[in-house]
Length: 261
Ligand SMILES: CC(C)(COP(=O)(O)OP(=O)(O)OC[C@H]1O[C@@H](n2cnc3c(N)ncnc32)[C@H](O)[C@@H]1OP(=O)(O)O)[C@@H](O)C(=O)NCCC(=O)NCCS
Image (cartoon, rainbow, N blue to C red; front, side):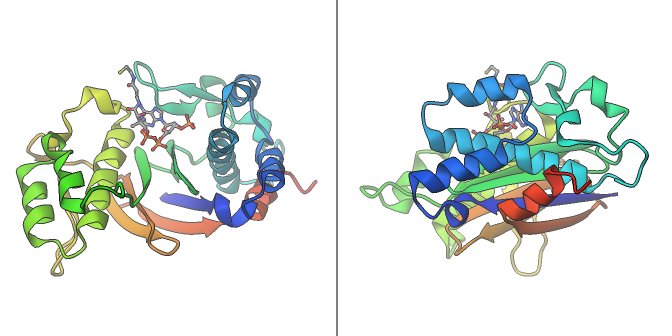
């Protein structure tokens, strides 16, 4: 049992043209359910539609990738239907396809700007989060981070304001870890006081450590950067589950989505 995360750079695939975007959207819409296709039509900005379609396509391709497609009734993209975990907005495999799909205990999606991430776990829960490393032009990073003061633990604030040598990037690494935790639980960001999630980034040979409500979080965390370092991500998954993180292209996604026979 392992956890696999695929990361897709949309800018790299689109090449900056509206035609490139439309072509990518068409390629990534394979397997969308009727409800998802309706939602796709509701997006006013084509970039948002593309990020949504790409997230769903990445998850479906990952789910298909872990199936044994030599089985008598191979799973198809359209067989993978999503519902919501009870009492939350977290997408999960719908009841009707749980019997069909093997080796998938949980999945999660994140998108921001150019990057879309999807993770699938064979055991336990998974939460993924990606964020662009950003600071408004008219603000210094100290001032910007200060705006999030009420959502940072005392240890995080001390690290960012007194010790970090890469303050803005470290802020986003902490932030994505908080979000990955929240998304693994499925609770939703509004239901949790983010100050109570306390992230210690890996440093001086010590591993990353996350506490929630004063207890060790029941997940192992991995933080990293994407592309040229302009984006950071974090994955929260069950401890002891091997993790693999891979950058993919639309061609890789299509190879999984569109059956060869
Ligand atoms: C889920 C949440 C943390 C996402 O944060 P974000 O950084 O804005 O967005 P991301 O791109 O990282 O993640 C979005 C994806 O998370 C997934 N998601 C949605 N709700 C989720 C939840 N409760 N837990 C985990 N993942 C969730 C979806 O796949 C979504 O992408 P999609 O709709 O395109 O498929 C945030 O939007 C949230 O808390 N939502 C819940 C809202 C809620 O609870 N509302 C109830 C009334 S307040």
